[in-house]
Length: 411
Ligand SMILES: Cc1ncc(COP(=O)(O)O)c(C=O)c1O
Image 1 (tube, rainbow, N blue to C red):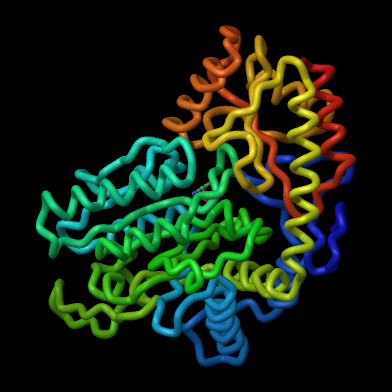
Image 2 (cartoon, helix red, strand yellow):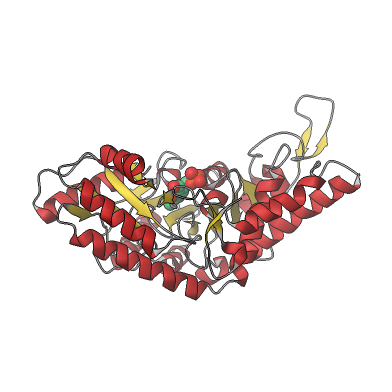
């Protein structure tokens, strides 16, 4: 397997195909060597998980439970939290949505990814996209004050926010939002899908109640994600997937079933062992890495990319909080007068560069930012969808420069 780009630690080298430049990490990041090695090592032992007495099966069961521990530790889980393996962040947030006690109101912002907008029940409150992080904190405080005044204070409230925007990369003030939520007796879930690949996410330090991530955005293969969080709602909820492994007793009558508690309650069926082990291997490698150095390298590349885009006459960046807001390595932009899908297709076909185009599964935010960009620049020829470039482990200045040169040609 070719390692295309090296990082300070061999375990965090990412795999790829020579000649192809991947600048679409926010959709799916390339696989880290740590993940590939962990899968290769386990494959000869491949056997059932939690279902067999043989040596292979016992080793696989141990590997799965160790992976749970490693991922939970990496994300700062509390000892009494559940760490539930899911398919991805969407799955994790849907699991939480199905576990909400009756009468729960969910409060979120219109800037969220669809995965953090659509699973929530009817009656959820969607706050407008704020102008800056302080505005988000003020808006949440006002909304929770009103909610607590107007509705039964005994009913649960859940605040659902992202750590970093998948459209702009901008960071949200998670710790402050958690403080506000808790001051009003609400819980908070962090969608860490875009934050965790770029920065340390410590659930206890941020003081969030739940946290969701996707393995495939965190340098592991597809198919494994995690919901970490407080046990009480999860243990009281109906099983997310009814079936083998989720029960403690099944009798002869149709409804004679007792569901187990703990992560297994929501992991019915044979689990994704390789996905969990691969994700844990990346978490372990990142835990050992100098994250500050990795972040500094990413920020230098991001600054180079944004400066280069700003210098291209027809390129307009999309942003929510303003040009200087802290952000991770994600930039969305448009080329005035050019259809974004056509630009993306030309970058791929003529320059072997992969970027994303569209509205990035965050339609309300992306449309709003396109309108804002038109107002800010006074241009009437901006397209109705955008382009997105995103970077991470293994990204290089040469790749950024290739994108800028290609855009200069295309534009
Ligand atoms: C902020 C954010 N949340 C959630 C998701 C959903 O992740 P997944 O598709 O892995 O479920 C994404 C995916 O792009 C995202 O960017």
